Length: 460
Image (cartoon, rainbow, N blue to C red; front, side, top):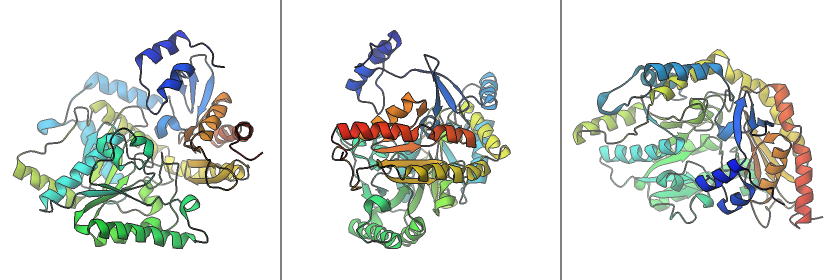
C-alpha cells in the first residue's frame, strides 16, 4: 500500500516530467527527494543517508561535496560567470581545459569542441563525421554503425545511435543513416559451445557483413563505448576492439569512442579506450569531466579531421555548429580543477588498488541463485539477475527494479538497468565504504528472490 504523498511530492508530481520514469506509477509512489550530499553519501528530506553506489548517473567521481570544486565554481562565477566561444571569442578556462584534454587523450587529438551533455557530444560527433566527409568530397559516406544495447544519448540522432528499444518506442526512432551491429556480450549472445575467441570472430564477421551489405563507401563512422554503461555494464571479451580496429581502418571508417562514462579513471586508466584496446579518431567526454559539478561535455578530434573541417569552414564561410553553453566558463574552470584533482590524488591508481576488492564482492554474489552473471571493469560493475535457465525472465525488466528498491530500503542506491543492477560508485570511495556498499546486497537479493517466487517469475 502506498503512503500518502507529502506536499513536496505532490508539487513534484504536478510540476515535473521525470526522465526514465513511469509517469503514471510515479503519481502513486511520489519522488524520492534528495536534499544534500557528503562524500559518497546523499541524504533525503527525512535526513536518511544513502551510499550513492552509482555516483549519481555515473558522474560524481569525486563525490558530492568536494570543497575544491565548489570553491573553483564560486571563484569563476565572481570573475566571469558566463561567456561564449562563438565568432572567435574565447576565455582562459576553455583554452586550458582543451589543452589538458589533449594531454590526457589516449590517441593524439588536435582540437576540442564543447557542448553541455553527452547526448549533445554524440550528436556533434555525427555532424562532424558528415561535415568531414563532405569536405573530402564523399557525400555518400554518411551512415553510422552503432551496436545493439549501446547507449549514446537521447537527442534525435544520439537516441538513434542508442540501441535500446525504450529509447526508440513511440519516438519514431531510429532515423535513417543509423545501423546497429551485434552486442559484444559473451554470456548472453554466445552460441552453444562457442568459445570467447570464436564469439569475437563472429562479431567481426557480423560487422564486416554489415559494412559490405550497406556498402563501405556509405559508412562514415563506428561508435562504441569501451564498456557499455546503460546497456547493462557489458564488458566486451578480450581482443574484441583489437579485432574490430583493422576492419574500420581497411574501410576508412572513423572510430568514435564514447567515453562519457568510462573517461577520467573509471576503468583504471585515464580512458576506457586504453583499457579495452580502442584507437579512436575522436572522443566524446562528459560526466566525470567536471565530476558532475557542472554540465559540460567535450568532443576531441584528431588532426586529419581538424584539418578537413577547418579547411571546409573556410570554403563555406563559417563553421555553422555550436551551443550557447558549450564551453561555459564555470564548467570549464571546474573541469580544469577536476582533472588537476584526479592527477594530484592519483585517482587512476586509487581505482586500480580498489578494483580487486570490488571484483571480489561481485564474484561472491555470483553464487546467489538469482544471479546469472556478474561482470566488471575498474569501478564499474553489473549484477545480472536471471532465472536458472539464463534465458532471461519471461517479463523482462520487472525483477531488477524490485532489487534496486530493496537496496534503497537498506541505504544503498544502485540502478536497475532492466534486470541488471549497475554499480558505479564515486571513485573516491574507500575500501571500507565498498564493503558497506555491498553489505546489504545479498539480503536485498534474498528479498527479491522471495518476491519473484511469489510472482511465479522464478521456480519455487
